[in-house]
Image 1: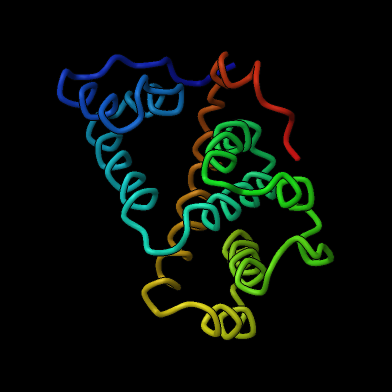
Image 2: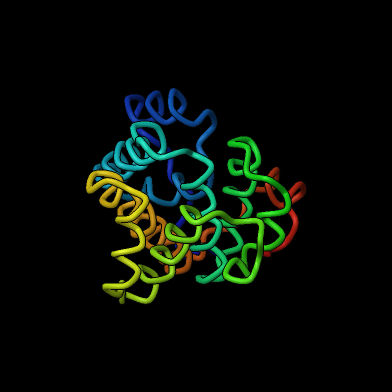
Length: 177
């Protein structure tokens, strides 16, 4: 059972959420219990999603891996749709839990996924950092680190609040991969 009610938004926040995402999903409605933080969260999430240099498909792979590690059905279901829309191949989605052994991933993707796992474990090794830096600039390293870190926070907030999966997503998404 969800631990906080779904909030209504101020007219300004409601307009901004609809501008960015359409109808606000349950995560935003739960966050809406603290309007100031919900507004800040919204802008940060938007920057990560839309003001980034790295390919959206790569970042969606990272987010899906974060969802797998955190066992976040909500994060998985919502970002599975986004990953597909961004062009992530079904073969990569199916092989994501075993990405190290799968030929479906190239060296850049492997570096980003290793970074994701390091961030999730709060232990990014020097070897992982060096491999990421072979493929990405300093700015891209920051961007990918923020992506993994932000979506680690998303899964933790979803868990803390026990946000219920939105009905339209529940009906159209396979279970956590």
